[in-house]
Length: 238
Image (cartoon, rainbow, N blue to C red; front, side):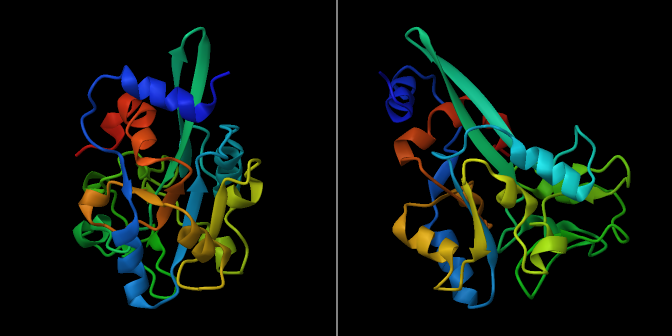
């Protein structure tokens, strides 16, 4: 029987050329973040454990009060038919809360800024004028959106109303597969720090040099260039 890893390799063998590499090794991003020496909250997503249940999407919407078609986190789902079997692949995405965010420098009012205390990138809705410059500047297409209720830009902020009180983001707490791990990347004793040290983490769009604080594990470089980049290249190319 074909397992998931074998299915991805077979898919890669018959795939059309993609428009660009989606995942890249995270070494430079991690080095840039740790060089700061400050508390930096980050998330690791183990793609081998994501079962596509979308409990994260539902709990995020409930926690942050967004409408059903407006999401701070999403799970991109793709599939491929190999032989007589259908294989599904899941990719959770959200704002990467980058160490060097391209959205901050283009904001004309200072509504989008990076918090000194933990590195989370936030949007102050009282200052946002809805110009969407930050949406256009973000290389991770689709993770920022205009909230139809407030008329201002919205995105994942690692549930700061929870994490500021020492709680986990809603998506992490409700992940049925245990695919999401959250914590301070600069705390050497934290679960996330140990996980990054023991795995081969990757980030999205590393060539943009934004140093994302969302890391992916559970895929080889070969696998990362297959289903997700084949089916959804428009999400990641600028």
